[in-house]
Image (cartoon, rainbow, N blue to C red; front, side, top):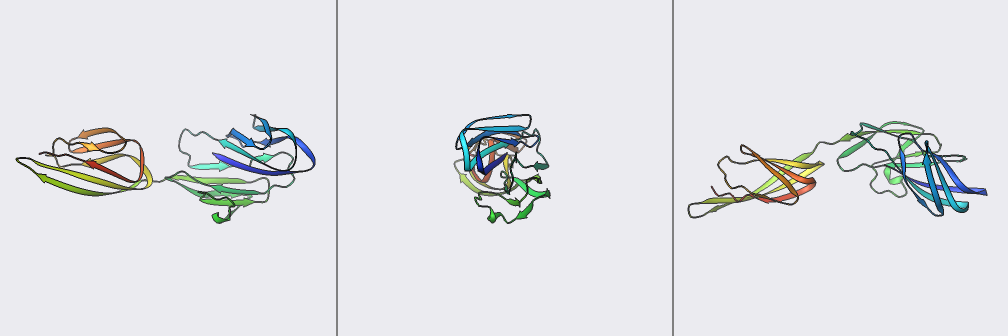
Length: 230
């Protein structure tokens, strides 16, 4: 997803429409801004119509999207070219979802700058600027492997002819979300029951249990489990 905050200024004569060239492979999903009456995207062109004549400074937000069936190793970003613009400057920030690492692969017509130089920084990881209308940026994307650590608190209960117990497992999850956990238990434990948030499925194979969640878990995930009479 590429979000463009387009700040433009019209001088001398006003305009009633703005024409832009959409980068190949992207579709326009949203256009909003002051005075926008209608917009149409077709054949790589975006035409924005205004309800009244535009003269002076104006801002439009345009969102482009690209669908990928598989996780892309490299993503190419091109400018949203404004037809007839006499002077163009660009500030560009790149951000990723949790569990994805971004790196600069190739760039032309841009230069990399510190991320704190972006005027409205949120969660950007990389920042670039350009003083020319034509530029190209290629980003290398890497899906990080999860790193999981576990802390187990065990409680043993001795009763009349029965030894029972329970355990609370707290997971620390780093780099990537995890949806499936595997837990090895002593083979002689019986009547095992797992409880915890968002558990979807529990499967046992010999003494190894596979716990599948409804969605990926991130950060710390505590589970209280195991009433274990033996």
